[in-house]
Length: 394
Image 1 (cartoon, rainbow, N blue to C red):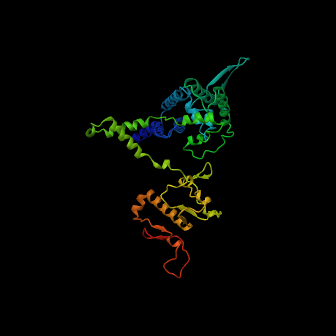
Image 2 (image 1 turned 180 degrees about the horizontal axis):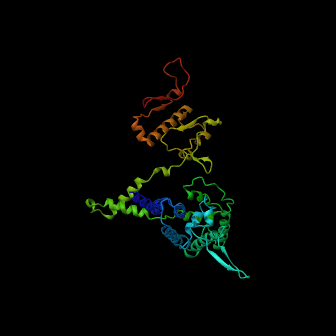
Image 3 (image 1 turned 30 degrees about the horizontal axis):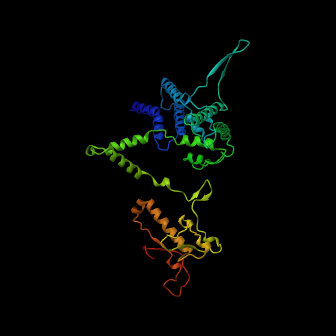
């Protein structure tokens, strides 16, 4: 029994790292930079296994693992068709100066050269690229080759520039990015969305060429999971009892299913933009005590005479500056806060339906009905704060 457990641990130690990396790379959001990063994770894990050897693998097995890892690494990274994976890893703002770029394979053994001096004595030296210039040269050559493809093979241009000007700007921008000089000294706030970082340089004259290739690299899908999932869905829909469906029907059903499975949270715009340090929507301005804008006013009507500002949801129309609006209704602070509380409670209830069901919770309504009129007791004329009601009516 103990022997079986040891063999099982040895098997998991050998096949576990590649399997975990492959599972992660099946994500729809995996990029070319992730391919190199998970390769590093696999290599580092095998390095720990060979150093500690807590599962007592035989030395010949460790040597074979070492050789196979280096062989596959050379096939995909060192001797691959292009340096796309290293380039993408370099273009991630958080890993541009990673120490691993100076020695891209942690399991690689630096070549040893034996030299003979004039006196006849032999001495050995280890070749190493300690400053990372070799990797940076490979990255530059790859980007220049992509620039050549855009201009010569595709016959297009980038940002309306000539090929010579684009080449000069690309060299300058690569060097500036490697030094994290302006404008590339901007901090990456959303680490899960590198494309968003590069899109901000769309109209920047000192980053436009490098931005063009960075966006293209990070938009590449590095797996075929979308096709595999679609094939699995078609197999499931085209079962034995539904085998007479037309191909157009299956395609339509797959499209409807994919649309239904889309997560609407990814399309939501956050209220506050961390990068620009500004709100994405206009806030109520009734608290500013500006002349002629003491209330947030709303025009009541059929909506045919709404101005551009009103349609944009800014809450302040041009009529506030031109004159009093027609049939304007005033919104006091109490009503604004009551509406905000109601929206928040409804949103929380929709986000946590199981919690609401488990606790038999009831959504109460905030009301500001007494904010503009006295309460039932005629002797009490002051306006109370927004009240939390037990029913849905004021």
